[in-house]
Amino acid sequence: MNTIWIVLPVLTLLMFDLGLTLRVEDFGKVFRHPWPIVVALLGQLVLLPLIALGLAWAFNLTPVFFIGLILIACCPGGSSSNVFSKLAGGDVALSVTLTALSSLITLFTIPVIMSWATQMIGESVGITLPVGNLIKQNLLLMLLPVVVGIILHYACPGFAEKTDRVLSRLAFPLLMLLITVFFIQHYRTIIDNMGLIGMCVTALILVAIACSSLLSRLVKNSDRQRRTVVIEVGMQNAAQAIAIASSPFIFHDEVMAIPAILYSLMMNVVLLIYVFIIRRK
Image (tube, rainbow, N blue to C red):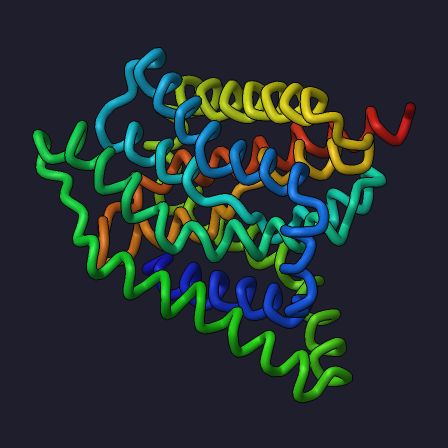
């Protein structure tokens, strides 16, 4: 089975569901309460890719895993972050706004960062990035579903709410289905590299959580805001990273998606532990 025919519909549905929950007024929070948003976006769009770059060098990853690690670090806006924020007693409205903003901003930042990473480490071993195809795929699978979801939210609010209830329940099972298919198809490569890549992605998550928490304290975010920032920085859009890595129009390399697969598993484990600790307190 070609996993691209699973990941592309999954990503489209997740972004459509995000659009169903958005209101234009949500973006006004950027101007009314800028600091929590600035800190989270700084962590998502700058800090995480830099940490991934340092870890990729430190762990001496092969070029395909090196680029795969940078790729998952460039794809914030995980579909479950709003649920995790709610469970942790965070600011859910802030979480929704951050997920929307990061998903839209990365339409422009991912081509820039991945083009640089590919030129630096990939071209010497034959890995190239068709930037035009990447932009087109992101516009089609990321922006268009969000816009359609927002339009439906205002045109048919009742239907949009019912659709969101269904899709929000399907999001995690669909992602797990995608990960399961990947494991079945690439189990030997995953097992052979699980120790190295597993430690690397776990370190990425833990360092990102620690740094985002510290930044939130420095700008005096409230406890609710800090919890949301930590979750938003740690939660990545694995479906987007897998779609870019495995797409026949971009990298066309499913092995490159392995860091995203392992990150998706570890981020859920680490953030569930984080939520458990918060709730115990």
